[in-house]
Image 1 (cartoon, rainbow, N blue to C red):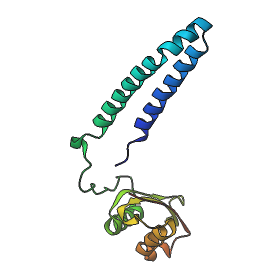
Image 2: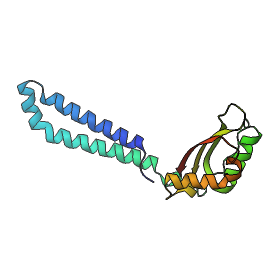
Image 3: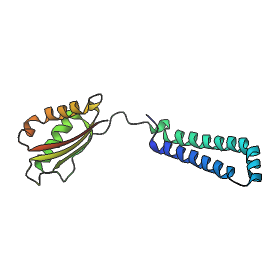
Image 4: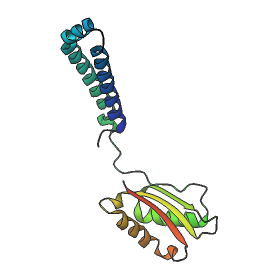
Amino acid sequence: MAPSRAVFRSASTAFAALRTSSRTLASAAPAARQLHHISSPTRTLSTRNTLSSILTSTISRRFNSSDAPAEAPAAVEAPDYLDEKELHIFQKLAAELSPTKLEVQDVSGGCGSMYALDIVSAKFKGLSVIKQHRLVNAVLKDEIKGWHGVQLKTKAS
């Protein structure tokens, strides 16, 4: 599992603060500049060591072995607000694709002629978007015959 964006964001923020403090010291009076040049390696080294220890502790906390992802993702459950047609589509997609995220919405105003589908499934892994959409179309081919249109958003998990 790759480190999250939050870890990279905190690291880049810390490095930006380090650069800013270095620039501030360099732009001070000439006497302060001389002092900066004399103490800079030590200050930079201690700041880097501190930064390194912060990053190490953050990463070890985020990726602790006890926080390992579950073996199998939980099955998605149909929300209570789905009507009969939406529920039928939801159940059919859930049975065939074993999605980790599945949203079905009638966007035709209630007549059932157009649906918006948002699906995240491991079965999409390694497939192009077109092939992912073809897989969904194959699962729903009988239902799609009576529709005016479908909005598909698919993603591999």
